[in-house]
Amino acid sequence: MNAPTSVAALAPTVKLLIGGQFVESKTTEWRDVVNPATQQVLARVPFATADEIDAAVASAKEAFKTWKKTPIGTRARIFLKYQQLIRENMAELAAILTAEQGKTLPDAEGDVFRGLEVVEHAASIGNLQLGELANNVAGGVDTYTLLQPLGVCAGITPFNFPAMIPLWMFPMAIATGNTFVLKPSEQDPMVTMRLVELALEAGVPPGVLNVVHGGEMAVNAICDHKDIKAISFVGSTKVGTHVYNRASLAGKRVQCMMGAKNHAIVLPDANKEQTLNALAGAAFGAAGQRCMALSVVVLVGEAQKWIPDLVAKAKTLKVSGGTEKGTDVGPVVSCAAKDRVEGLIARGVADGATLELDGRNPVVAGYEKGNFVGPTVFSGVKPGMSIYEQEIFGPVLCLSAAADIDEAIEFINDNPNGNGTAIFTQSGAAARKFQEEIDVGQVGINVPIPVPVPLFSFSGSRASKLGDLGPYGKQVVLFYTQTKTVTARWFDDSTISHGVNTTISLK
Image (cartoon, rainbow, N blue to C red):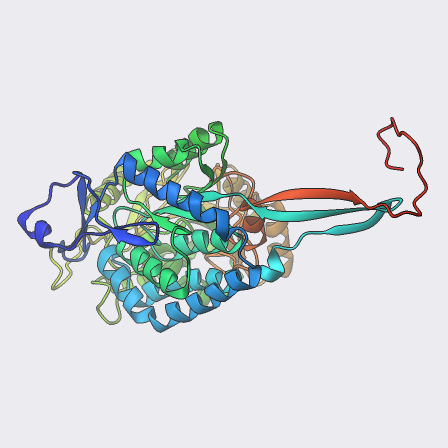
């Protein structure tokens, strides 16, 4: 916990949302929200007390009694209004996000927009939360299913997408008839809170959406609370594994989207300029702080000669504050993140990888105190090296080599993670072979960051995911609802009695 400085003490406090009211926390533990480009303290965020977390859950539990009975059209119209409000406030939301997280303004707008897409999908809930019916499964017997809300659900979200990922969670949970307790990242909660304000303005009733802030204690309280029925988590593998184990042992549904090491294969027949642009954008955009960032590129055959061209492309990217026009790479989120990334770069050199481009200590005029690391490129990266085994979460691209596509596919499948992968080629046969044989949940074909639109669901796999069902889309409707199957027979006066049936068969 950073103790508040005299400057921080003057900064506004981030509020809790409990029962439809924004309230000041009574905690004694606070953390500064810091602009990573300037170190300016923007706000102070409280680490909520156990009583405050209990109050938020109690509020959600009480609201569920009426919200679950709210007509589906009424719920849908709230999210129609909500998506309108997000659009109208896009510039403000992006500015808040850039100030506290560091990504460029255009990327911040993209962060909000990819969440907005889920809100739009939530407004279609009337077509999504449909059961099934089979008529006459036996004589005069019908069977049908109801998709009913679970109750109080919770979400724990990371710093890297403080708009998009909360919007992955609470709109779909609420639209399906649940109530929600959100714990956003304590590093950059301000844009999340602005989105919450807009949700209330759109008509989300008191208690249906609640927000608490905090760290490990808050996470554990959410995992343990008897009245929370389901938890959605996005973040690191370490914390995600802890959340999954602790919450599932407490009888909850849990979905955890966790760490990654996303690989791309480049075949020699790929369109060179398009591929170089895609690789640079996916590796260095958002300063590499994406769970779907391309962090490893496997160059096949003659494509290994493209390394100088890729380095040259990386050198064209502008490193500066996120509000500066033309900036490609902003700061990483904190001083600690910068130190970690720079430490891993040093480890990469020590482990024997070739440092083709060193992004440490860039000169960024006007932002001398910023947490900047420039685009960094290693070649000759092999399994066992720290820069390969760990998720760097910075603007560092690792290059490996393979003789052919089979070797490249085997190389990727040997990595335990399975969030995303991509292939760059002009061969349909190679692309189809790749999509069939690769053991990764989200595949891009000439698309570097294959995050699905909400018509589908986020489908990371293997060590990148715990839980059966992914965020948003059709899968999350199943995650946030309980299937109730009803088998019904109605008798009228003319029905002939068959007597006592002591068998398992329906007659």
